[in-house]
Length: 151
Length: 144
Image (cartoon, rainbow over all chains, first blue to last red; front, side, top):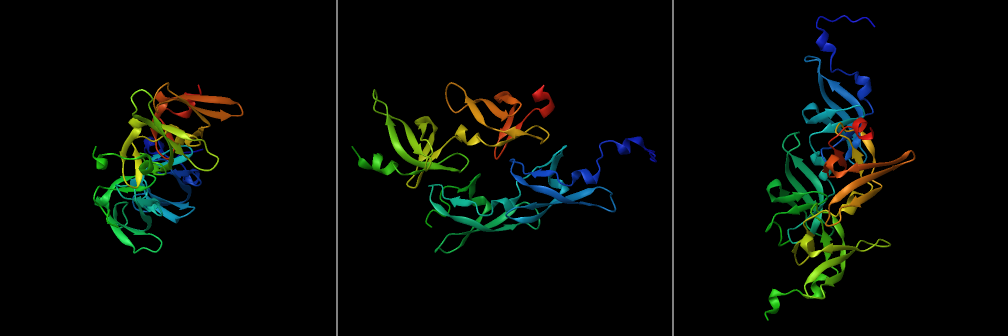
């Protein structure tokens, strides 16, 4: 192959966009989000701006390149756990009482920062929790002591 | 004896158990009491239909609340079946079995069963365990 480039180093550490399609996308904690469906690049800066993927439950997801940590041979590793993955997680009080499940997530703009989550339980009134109410966010969301314990 | 300072077996049995990751493990089925000092040595947790009981030592109990018992660990058996990725995010395989250290909840080795033979991964190569297991080494070096 003939190369027509001024600076040889511009070819280093590059990959074909075609190779990115189909790579598995993993969240920071190792949850498989989906596979790369499309790649968006900037016409001005000529670099990748983000990827499109599809989560089986959530649907299509666009992830900005700011949140991409590593692009390897067969995976793209994110530096975040997308906030949207909190959907349908159980919410429990510090005392262990199940309050319901996350049904809606409000973020700060389009960033991954959660501002509020709407919690709903069958035959109960929906309510809102703030990020400051959360003590531990793992397989379920455990609230801090004294938060929503009267519910 | 002030009854308010004590819990009865009725208070504990049947209570849900939640690990340090917020995952429901099961419900308390048995209380193990030390014959010598009569202290509670641990709890037996029923993980559900057709699943073996797991015994958790009392030192792994963080708190007992009116609704649940919280653990300060994530039981190692939860790792079984998880996907293992190397330091670059390449899939190495799935955890088929776990070798535990002699005492406690510490993992000694993770084993991946493959048709070509088992891959034994020492805990020294584990970077983090969350939804999957991430290694601190790349696949090529590991298999060598």
